[in-house]
Image 1 (cartoon, one colour):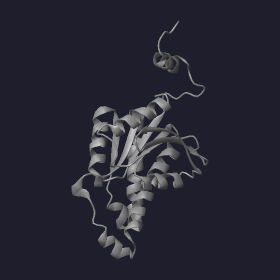
Image 2 (cartoon, rainbow, N blue to C red):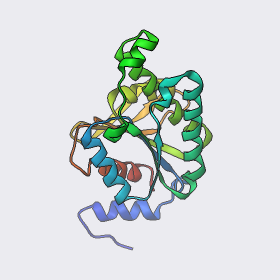
Image 3 (cartoon, rainbow, N blue to C red):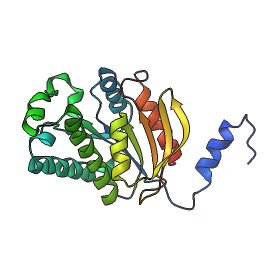
Image 4 (cartoon, rainbow, N blue to C red):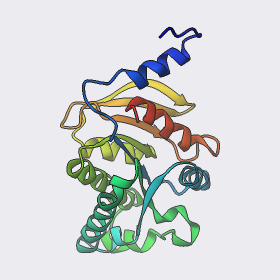
Length: 216
């Protein structure tokens, strides 16, 4: 076979015909969405419509009510994703605050726990990171992560035991691609983007980029 083209066709042909040393056909992507920005909702809904995904919605209030209810919600969402991931290449974990009617007044929790708003949001971020970590531990075919929100990305990297990120590319303006450095999940592909950034198809483009990286 002789491929005559500017290069894009040859690259695609090679990716399809040359089998990697490790089989990657079953590799999966997990998207973790914690942003409540209206733009983030639009982007996620377009992803759900454009690609085959399974979404588990987090009841954010449950993460704040008590340690017991937080653990129960983390376990529920983790189990839901693991139960359905074999039928979907892409799984998404989304805070229900993406819809305005579910948004929480943090004031009562700040009073109850005598803490700042940052402390309250930190509970949510760490809970999302814990869900992602449990999914990756239980199902090794997850090889890529998409995260929305800098605080969530930091929490995920901390929970994954990452020493840092090896940034390699800018998929879109303010959407960075790299791989995790150090820890048990070193080499995991990751794209992080601010919730307010990008056009309606921004998350869809980021997920498609990750698919190419893991040879889906």
